[in-house]
Length: 132
Length: 251
Image (cartoon, rainbow over the protein chains, first blue to last red):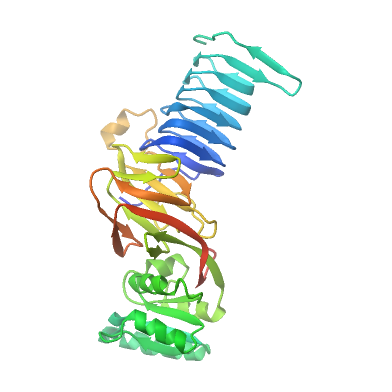
């Protein structure tokens, strides 16, 4: 209930939106700032800021962000303007487009990788399979 | 001219001493004005009309949260600054504006630091603090998406000023409200199964400007500013910088 003294650990500085584990968002979600996802998002997800999808998060959506860190499940394509960090617990079913991609050992990616740089476009259209 | 509106409950004998002290304090700081006492024959609407007709430049609500909330709903369109002098129980509104005691309130009125604050609107009513409910079946419908609570959610709220104990930032000057979903606390055996032994899960926070509150099953009453209720479905929006309030701190 509201009014109880709880330590929710949500004081993340610079975070505008937190999709916690007790909610599910359905539709075309658009944000200007930084977003943390710990719950569920279905539809599409766009932000001009940083996106962090924690372990336990479920995203069934096409995602667009300036920078992103994925540690949960993502079913859909992801387009990141700058850097995408794929953590060891991530499971991505979809195509990835980013300027820089860091993939941790243990992450699962099934989809195409496309990387863009200022000098041109590097394309790697091979299916990655499990990266263990 | 300062117009002091004393709520009807302040006519009780137990407030006599405090009100007489208030009169002295106001005179002492040179901000004594006209006093309007509500009674069974004189309601707030009549009093505010009368005060404005007599040239009121500042309306001061003397009473509790209910007093302030009623006054706000009547002066919203009048472009008059609101002052608050807390009296009686349940003075959360005054406290959230940095006004803890009657004595402090008088000093704050004299200092006259006026701020333009956002006001929330739910259907045709205004709110300064928050809308809250402990029902976990309320859906927030926005233009492009819906936010649905899951089974582990316990309470929802929309805040202009954070009066809860949840750790998030609200700013009543940014033209946004914060929609908050709070999950149930984990029991000790549930915590055993978690990697991190944390007592609570993270709340959800969405900055919003406008939404509709719906209930998954039936219309329910939701709490407005912790002192009145309104039924769902209800349209909620924020009105940026709509109310002038004399405050005692940077909220």
